[in-house]
Amino acid sequence: MEKISHNRLFWGHVVAVAVVACWGGTFVNTKYLLMGGLAPHEIFLCRFLLAYVAIWSVSPRRLLCSGWRDELLMALLGLSGGSLYFLSENWAVGISYVNNVAFIVCTAPLLTTILAILFFRSVRATPALIIGSLVALTGVALVIFNGHFVLHLNPLGDALALGAALCWSVYSLLMKRASTRYSSVFITRKVFFYGLMTILPVFIFQPWHFPLERLLEPVIWMNIVFLGLIASFVCFVLWNWSIARIGAMRSSNYIYLNPVTTLIASAIFLHEPMTTMAYAGSVLILVGVFVANRSDGI
Image (cartoon, rainbow, N blue to C red; front, side, top):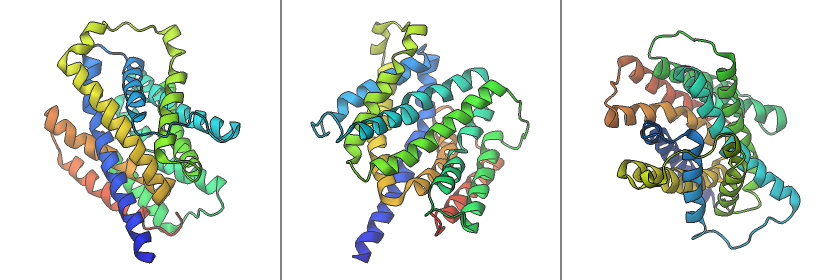
């Protein structure tokens, strides 16, 4: 029995790392689509619509949850982990400095820890958890700012980035509750549905403008397919499964790895250089995540 439990924890950690590695690389896919002329909310609609269609092939055929409270929980998951998160992050990038946004969004694990300590009595702020989180956050700063610690404050943009991080923290904690009652596949389908429903009002103010025939261009459809089928459909199912196995806070701590995988993907596909500071930051992130996830408080 103990061996089965250890196996579940082990694979929960492995899956979380794999998902974050994939999500870190999506920066490259999104950049290609933005350069191709797609707007952020159009990219979100395409990827979530494709993911929603795909997940029906494996999802239970039931439409609704057991009660209206659970249905409301699913709506909050779709809003916090879907439309509101992606819109806040993309809008922040549009009006603030990318470095600021990337660093602030990577505070999501720290915010998850703070919220969990505030609202869940079972969570304790142990020294290992605090030290590991701070070491990982320092590593994130080294990777993102590359040794140039100059913050250009933009109140609105930075507030949106903080809002995105807070959205993901709320999503992670709500997901832990939902995963005790429903399968990860069913939850993910509901998240896609409510993500789509809550993004539609944006098109009233910013209508679709991208020519539909251009969706057939290889650089466009290949990146959309990857974002929709792999980064959304597969990764969201696996992420929700991981949260159910190892908990919201341990899963969230792996978000610190995001800049590392983004850095590697950028070096491979966008030919951006890897610096000594980036290597040092990557090591700190790995050490910090390892220490934080060994904490008994989570």
